Image (cartoon, helix red, strand yellow):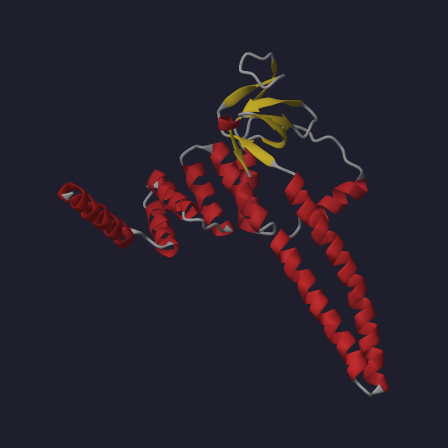
Length: 254
């Protein structure tokens, strides 16, 4: 019984010490940036990863992680985190610029299959902003629409009613468009899953089996669509249409 009490005290003590030593995400990002500036890139990566393990993420955090991995020569991981950053902030110029530099260093330079113009244009439109930002825009348009409708029914002045009717008509059209875009953006994010090869190279298989026939070889940093999963294998599709299977531990999901 005494042993159990002592063990309990030790456990409580360790929990107290760990809680006191735990760093906040703000402290970890500052510390990670300091390590990065000192050239301690691996340590900086560890600090940034601790933030992610606490359930936090941001485009700037992924940008820093991408830069740190790029400095250590891990091209695949660098591209992975740049892509994660762009997913949260599609218009970020710094992330886009560094991603272009990283992609230029990849071995596989694959030509994408041509798409129908309207489909390509629509994908560019819905992915130009993040899902959360499209949701905010739709909400703002909806509130303006409700306000203009309210003014139309509550106001007794004909001039205000005319303006309110015009504004409500315009914002109703905008609301329909933004709602369609929001739904398409949500559906795109829910159904489209991308991955990055983290290994130096890999021979993609024709079946989800390590003993399967080699289909083609891809190299670190290449981006592909993940179409299916069987156990610990993913079915991938390259932009040129090639399809094959690759193990889960060889890739990073965006």
